[in-house]
Length: 339
Image (tube, one colour):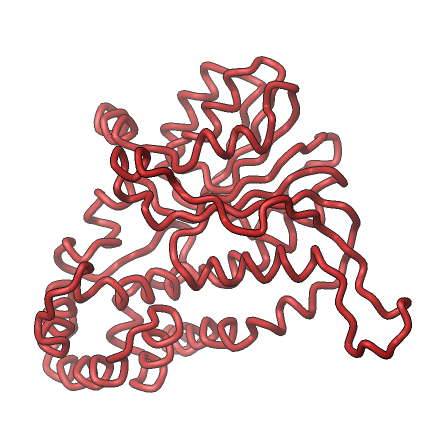
């Protein structure tokens, strides 16, 4: 318990002041914290006695932080150990939801937990599971074929040397199972230890985290289901940390906040219904002071919108990122190996 508290003190909720100014918690309401983590947003919202927070997180270890908030705030705070794509499983009919919040970054405790293996500083067996997973990075690296690995590295990590790295992984694993140190070494050799601002293994590790935790489908269906339960006037706020997830969020908010026609010659009846209202077209980014205080916030982007109308069909959104959803389905090959 003491270790959890120590890690919690080192955590900085990103763009906290900006987020609070958007959701206006001073006037009271129910807020959903989809990525509870170390509870930074939830704690700030609960400072007002008129507010209630429903929080959830797929990482069961966040339960210890949630338990302390439950003891302090009682019925005003509830926590569930679920993924945010499962938000529709919650009984929210009686709740007057004012805002739904997503922080897609990793908490300090998760990054510092070497057993989770989110960092290339970890040792031993590859992992990268955030909770409620069906497989780990170990299975991905040691069981998927070369073509599948290339797709994961290229599209989820935007790694230019995906083919060479995947090919070397296949060669190496013929001799033994590849662990974290082996993978980092392979990447370093292929990339010849290039001196860049980021570690050579950063993009490959990012791609594995996304694939292992199925973060693309989590985000897409988390946004869709959150929109459906959000009442008109409610806000949806998302903080992203890399370009892939930001592209998904940007498309979702922009596509459903503007009218568009398949042809300028068609009548107005074919225009899409405007579902969202965006006040800031550009994302909100951290100030220089925040980046100085918390360097890990430097890549954060906050986008938000307010709901205007309801919609049940989001096929257009799913179709836009179908190629990424299909890459996630490569994991089905891993499940077959256990049958």
